[in-house]
Image (cartoon, one colour):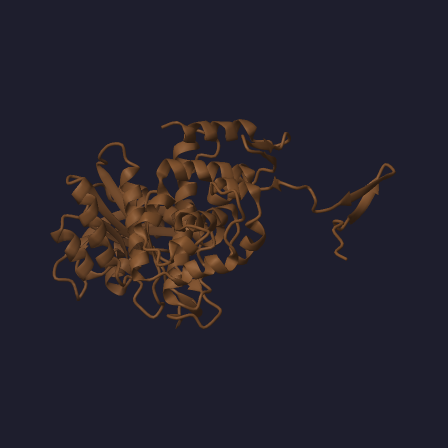
Length: 438
């Protein structure tokens, strides 16, 4: 005979009271805040509905219990809520809060159904999702921007299996992929999975060309600035930017010739440090052409001297302006992109590329990008001017999405009874109101 009595968990009591627990609370969710806010921001952007309409669903519709939009929402909302594995969805499919977010009255898709979704991905899937991400970026502007700074950067994505396209990378000392990200401010435009046996700048030129064409199609007069570290300093790319009237500010790796050009500046910085004992940073500029370059280009040199010694740095640019201002206010600002990549990798599990097939892993990377797009939209549309205006995805999840609630459902309404002890009630109300406004 089946034992339906919930298992009692015993904990140390106090004041002569027993302390017991069991998983028998009924419709109680720890993700109530997230299910409400993610559904609302997704409805406002129309993001996942747009994604599903851009993809081809080869399944026989009459035989399917879960449409493509519901599958995408289930997977992307799960990532935003902190559930990195598909296996998490076997118990989550019974969560009434998540069912409500997906506007379903029945059990959600199983892990195996979501797995089949991932393994159907192909080149056209990746292309379509990127197109939606770029269109969402364009749609986010109410008026034509004067300048857009496109940040390019690559990172390592370590793998621990026999995935297609994995190779050993000497610099990272591991088997990995080498995804390329493109951000404009905090908004993500491209998350492109690549094998690690290639040059770090591989395909960046083609991606920049496609972005330029689409952005100038909408905003013909917008000023485009290409920004990257020394891994993207390639002569052909710089020449292409010059022909297409694209500004660039890119790092240049140190070498003997550059150090010789800035020798006097480095010596001056060292002398000032020895006399004052304080860190010294001096700037200058000169024109320089590497052996593979067809022409000389403007180089900005930074001579820095600290207790650790000299640390010269160089950037190449076709922008006008004061060298120190260009270096400090424009080039160094690219460091914020590394925080955005960390959000992708650490907070939204972009490194969970454990599928065997290549396109399934690219699809997973893009699903995490869609989850980031939703959370970034909450930050941009609803948290501006609040204490969480610069909060990272993990903080948004902890303080706004992970809200406990009892859920009561009948034929007339669904009520979320959020925790009375929730400490960010006013902030949650503010975010809900902002996302409800047009």
